[in-house]
Length: 444
Ligand code: AMP
Ligand code: GLY
Image 1 (cartoon, rainbow, N blue to C red):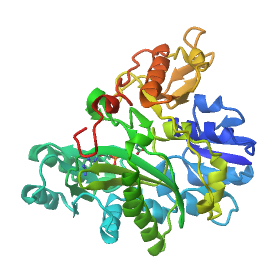
Image 2: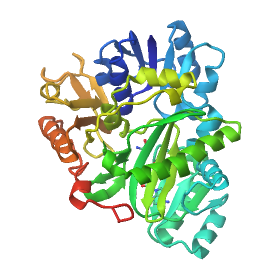
Image 3: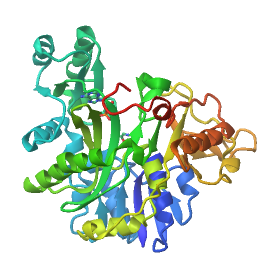
Image 4: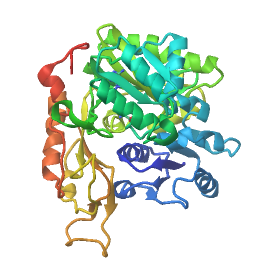
């Protein structure tokens, strides 16, 4: 089997790492990949010209006689890459453009949830800044109110406005200054939900599904959820995130009606459905859908997966996910993201990374690369390090252990051996929950 993985982050490294373990996989291409992905067995990274062009990807897949394409990020899915592969004979994992609207249009997702009776926050759709400002003034929602750009905004399109003036600034930025272009020309104003967040991903063939183990992301840059939002500073996966009852409620009240509703509307969802949930005192509610694997959740989740991922993808493509029984390690896993100095603001690239060779010998630890590049003779500083930083979220240090504290301790031990100039990371990934043991509905 020849596989093509699209994307360049820690999520794609985890996908390539897991697929490379399959005996039936002979060759993996990753477009564009990163320096860590290029070091996986059977794997080659390459940049196509022009970068990100969907037709260039399709032509490459045909030329190389790729059997299966796996899409990491949302942008190609929202751009219709799955539809583009129609009639080529090349199989591809992901929803079609219409179904990917569950992520690419927050208004589509909210209206869909409303129609299907899927629990979510109360909301109001606004087509103009005046309408939004007027709604915020007279709505009964407590502050913070949540302001969301309708379209894709690279994870930056959601703001929890702490008072009217913050809401006003945000609405004007989104709708008048158009900081996200057309993505912010329509917005949602939404009530703020309280509780503990949980990421719940399922494989779906459109008709049947198989859940993955639950996980939790950490979006804020500093400990105790302070500082600005980022692409994700770490995640952990632990079955204890959900009671059996909560898990059943999520399946019955969110996952199943979503998949049934999408099929009912003639746009079956085939691919990875990511449900971003808030576990509120009134039960789980949907914050957002993504139409792909989460980053960094995929790193700890795949570290717990025992089943061959290729078997799951094939079952998905053949509409027989219900015949499969997925096997997971009961051991929790923790992923700590090591970020560049300054991230999520401005940062420099090209810092040599040390310690990776020593960490590669640690048991039950895997370092997934995000923003890294290979040091060449031309740009190498000294001789010691084959890797350099090349992005904000540089590495995802991931470890598994018999319980959450052991997994976190192992991940942090590995982090302590790695260094690059300006490196920073959160010290509370997988730790806060142990210390606080916060139940659903309690403030995080
Ligand atoms: P994004 O992944 O950029 O769409 O941002 C979603 C994040 O915004 C979630 O992970 C939550 O932390 C936060 N969020 C979104 N909607 C709400 C809401 N209604 N109440 C509280 N937090 C929310
Ligand atoms: N971890 C959140 C996301 O992938 O969007």
